[in-house]
Structures are given as structure tokens and as C-alpha cells.
Amino acid sequence: MNPRKAHPLPALAALAAVAALLAGCDSGADPATDTTATRHYGSIAFEPCTLASGQGARNVQAQCAKFEVPEDRSAPDGRRIELNLAWLPATEEGSATDDPVFFLAGGPGQSAVQVWPQLDPAFAAVRKQRHVVLVDQRGTGGSNALECRPADDTLDTPATDIDADAIAAMARRCAAEVADRADPRFYTTTDAIADLDAVREAIGAAQVNLVGVSYGTRVAQQYAARFPDRVRSIVLDAVAPNDLVVGGEFAHTFEDAIRLQSGQCRELPACAQRFPRDAHAQLESLVARLRDAPVEVEFRDPASGESRKGTVNADTVTGLAFMFSYMPQTASLLPLVLDEADHGRFAPLMSLSELMGRNTAGSMARGMQWSVICAEDADRHVEDAATKDTLLGQDVARMFFAGCAGWPHGSRPDGFTEPLRSQAPALLISGEFDPVTPPRYGERVVQGLPNGRHLVLRGQSHGGLALGCMPRLLGQFMESADAKALDTACLDTLTYVPPFTSFNGWEP
Image 1 (cartoon, rainbow, N blue to C red):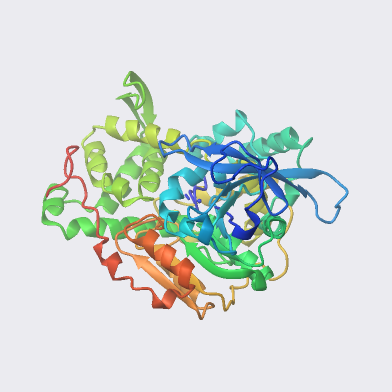
Image 2: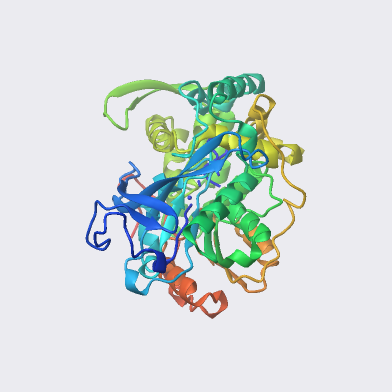
């Protein structure tokens, strides 16, 4: 989850299925060797396809399909929409199990199919004996995406440049733009879990394994609560409790993460000597200066290398710091970039801000995001006066929910915010420095999971499935469905990423 782009809660989703149903294909060809044949998974016909994220990740060979569902389940004869599916067969199909994996992407607003190539290596052990079927949640990716371009792009400008009325007006224009093909009231988490269960039934799986990341952990918990007998196991990475107001606590969780990350510099002699000022205090001071006096700067375009001019203001700095905080590798750059800016050298900060903004642009379907948060979170948000003195302040939450005034939205069912109580085996993962879903969230959720275990990854941030030995542990958990029996000593190799002391790197 990102206060400007709702990354995910930055910030990831998927489904999987049964081996016994994989033998046939319409052409009669051998599905193990024929890369052009139609293959059936249960009653769904799939065609060969290639998944590519466009983010430099490797391409992944898969099978793709469309699956129709009613947009409004209370009116089954009304409009129908297509869900975009991708099936990744088990790599050892001969020994594949009959319980699929549902991977549930973040956001809200992220496409499971588009993000998968970045995550596929983390599932290498899981995919040996389990199929994975990715479902773009309705309103995202190829599932009747609720996106409005190009007007929606203007929402990526600094918060101080757009007021609540302007955002609400954009939401109204976006709603009018999609009105001929979508009713935004029916694009909630509750609608999504009904879709997932329809896919489960169509592929013939009696039980599934849920793997949710960030906002996807909400989807997983809601599915497990509604369909408890259909869940074999649960993995929650970057955990969002059911009662969390998505976007409502960003100011505090980001503040905590920056303080924790700054503390690491104080413990490293080379860093403490190079940056005598605490990074949090330096960031606070820089934001205050730029709020009063934005700076015109000449910088190099991160893509073309050409010289450009732009304005650095308080939102440029806090936005970059927030995006950096999602990964320890980028967070390690923050003390150096802040120090450069503090000495009047703003070009590196501006270039990096442009680069990070371009890398995340278009990664979320904003309309779908509004459908979710306006139905499930907005009315529960109570402005906290204490956020006024934080780095992000109160404007972030205000901007996050401002679109709800102009966006048609549904409502959440009774009991939606109740903690998940489940006997299902569960593995929960948190990053020590996560700026949006801190470890205390995972501790709250695991209380209702007697067969659950919560792992906190030292020095890490948002999303841990691919880190260190986690892919191997994920595979072991899927095989045994016993989180408490996992030997997690291998995670001790995860450590803190030392801050850069120059643009050449950090001290050895």
C-alpha cells in the first residue's frame, strides 16, 4: 500500500489447481509436449501464453483463459464480466497434488497476472507439485479494469497541488467513463472472493491454499472466513488485519519505519561518522524548508540522461522517502540523498523521484481501488490529530479517500471487520521495517490462528516471499501444512542493508 498510489498494501495475487484434470486437451495432442494445444483445467479451456511484467523480470510460460461471472450476483441475468486467468502447471505434473494455490495480489488495484513474473522464482519449490492459477481481481488487469486515462494520471502530482474537490471531480469523470461497461458498486473484496470461489468450483478443486500479499491478505482472510471448509492453508505476507482502515495509518507506520531505519545508521560507525545528523530529523528539517520555499533544480532525466528542470517541494521528498522505505536496498540510499539535498544538491533527489514515479505509474487500477476503499474503509476513517506533526501529515489520508465523494460504491457485509478465527494452518510474514504493514499487524492476526506462526524478517520491509530461504520455507509449508514445524534458522542470514556513505556504495 502506498499513500499516493496505494501500492501496495506495494504492494502482489494467484490461484492453482488439480493434476487429475490435466490429462486431456481438445486437439488430442500430448499436453506435456504440445505448446499450442488447448488444455482444460476442469471446465475451463486454457490457451498457451507468455506472462511478462515489463519491469525487467523474466518471461513466464503459462496457459491463459477468460472466465465469465455475473457482475451483480443478485441479478444473475444481468451484465456479465470476464475474469482474466493464467494457469501455471506444476513443474512435476506427474506428482502434482489436487489442492491449488490462490495467489492474491496487493493494492488494492494490482493485477495478479502482470505482477507474477516478478514473484515466480519465489514459488519454485511450491510449483514442483502444485499448479498455480492467477486471477486478475475484477476491476484490475484484464478483468474489466476500472482505469481512466489520461485524466487519472494527474492524481500522481503532489498532494498539495490537488484538493479534495478536484479529486472527487476526477472520480465522477472516471465513473462516467466506465459506466457503459461497469457498475463500480460491485468491485469490492466481497465480490472478489465470490469470483475466486467460482473459479475454484470450475477447476474442480475441493480445497485451496491461499497466498496473499499486502491488500491480498485482506482478500485471503475474507475468503477463509466465508469458505472455511475450502481452505487447506493460508500464507499472509505483509499482513493487513480485517479492521485496518487502509490508508488511515500510513502517517504513523511510515514515521515508525523511518525512525527504525535511522537507528541502524547510529549503530554503524562509518554511517554515524558520515551522517552525524539523524536521518529522521534531517528529513523533518528538509521537508519544513521545502514546504516554505520549493527549489527549482536542473537534473538528468533518469531514462534519457538529458538535462531537465523541475521543482523539488516537500511532497517530492516525502514521496521519495516513502517509496524508498518499501525495500531496504533503496532505503539504504536515503541518508545520502538527504545529506546531498541538505547541502543544496537536489539533482540526485529529483532524478530518483522521477525514476521511482515512472516505475510505479500505472501499476494500480485506481477505480477498483476506490471501489474497495470507499466501500470498506472510508466511513471508518477518523482523522487523527496526532498525524498533523508527522512527515506525511493529514493530507495523505484525506487524498486517499477524497475520490469517494464522486465514485459510486457499495458497502461491506456485517462482520467484515471481525478478526479471522480459523483452524487452518497459517504462515504469516512481516518485515521489521515495513512502512505500511508493520509486524504488530501480523501479531494481531495470528492471535486468531491457533495453527499459525508469525515470522518477522530482520532488516526487511514490505513483502518477504522471495527473500533469503523464504521460497524454500514456503515450499515446505505447502507440503506439510505445519508452520510450527518449520526450521527457520536459515532466516538468520537475513541482515540489515548498510546505508550508502557515497554514491559508490557503503563501507565494507
